[in-house]
Amino acid sequence: MTSLNLSIDSFKPDLRSPRGTRIQRGLFIRLLRVVILILLDATSMCFAWNVAVFYGTPFESPWTQNILFILLKLSLAIIIFDTTGLYKGGIYRRNYFGIVKAISLSSLLLLFIVYLYEPNGFISRSAFLLYWLLSVVFICSLRFFFNISTNFLRQKGAIRHPVFIISSAEEKEYGMKLIEQDNWYKIQGFADSKCLDLANRETTFEYLRSQHVEEVFVSWSAIQRRLFLCWHFYNAGITLRILPTMGELSLPKFTFGMVGDVPYPTITAPILVGIDFWIKRVFDLCFSLALILVLLPVYLLIALMIKLDSPGSIFFRQKRVGLYGQEFHIWKFRTMVTDAEKIQASLEAKNEIKDGVFFKMKDDPRITKVGRFLRLYSLDELPQLFNVLIGEMSLVGPRPLPIRDVQKFKTKHFIRQEVLPGITGLWQVSGRSNIDNFEDAVKLDMEYIENWSIWLDLKILLQTVKVVLQKTGAY
Image (cartoon, rainbow, N blue to C red; front, side, top):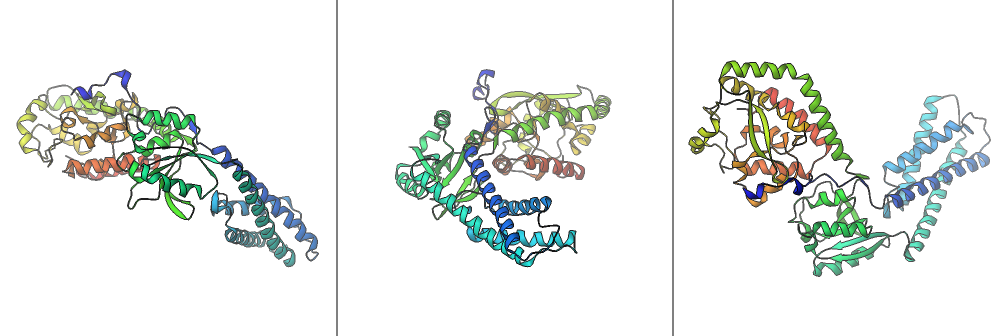
């Protein structure tokens, strides 16, 4: 067990926890592009409206110079542009057919709103049609000029996004040719897949940060056997793009982008790195403290029931293995006889878990009468709220296992120790004690870590309440 005994000095943070809060790399340039495009579009529409009113059929209307009408017109168009992706980079902002559709939709919605708001107020049909036509012409023309200008600057080496390539030597040339098809990238360097090994990983990310790299292109062969490496890029504020050289893949949080004419998976860095994890920790602290205060009468009642039912202590305290192998004491209400751990050795042959990694027995003779009731509704787990409060656990995460179980781990199982253990998790809401194979439980833990989000935690907490009330798989 020496590998599990880590000192406080060697303690590592949760896999999802960044070292400090960072802003997404390259965010300023992207925001500047969006602001310029919005200003160009708004200027085009205002100019188109003034020209249309001047040259259209003269008609007295309260809408002609109404400032609220102008703001409504601009807001509708800009919202539609944004939702259809016309403010994104690359080919998206040059989607002229998409611009025509967006202007047409916003104009029809505008006409509909004006009619509903004031059916007796009219707008000249010629002015309205002229506004639509001029808006399309002016916006497309200014965007075309904007694209020519940015392309010229990029040909001179300006406003390019610094990127880095990580792949095997055989795939390097292919990756560089693919990236160079688009002139908005500046390749800062290249490294082989060894730079992502555990021993070299920290040095690699320090170098990427020092070079102000915004995006990293990684070949599938360089990342496929390095579990959860995506979280390291995510927490560094660096966008990860997978070079399109692989077949089937499974990555969390990815969308598809384009390099030239080839689609590739992308894991975009968050705008504010680490904010979601700190929200999780604040929620853990506040929610656990609130529950402890609210459930204090329940704690006292359970303590009384345990004392009256059988001799022994009220609480069960056991060493468990948590984050990065760090041992800590987990607290539960006692549900078994006092010498339960000693008796377990004689019951190992009756273990119902097929691979024997952890111990489960449906009709366990060590469980007391009150203990069986507590387990039925998972009330024995309530003291773990104190573990959450002091930061040893989270409300949601892989369950911390006893030392006896962790000693039977294979190397691949230790990856579940890279996040804070939890009171409940995907494993618990997917069958609880009905899962009779440790590998199935590990798969659910892996799925949770890969796809973690605040919303997934909330979903699991709500499902936990449902599972506990239905007594699903509890014993």
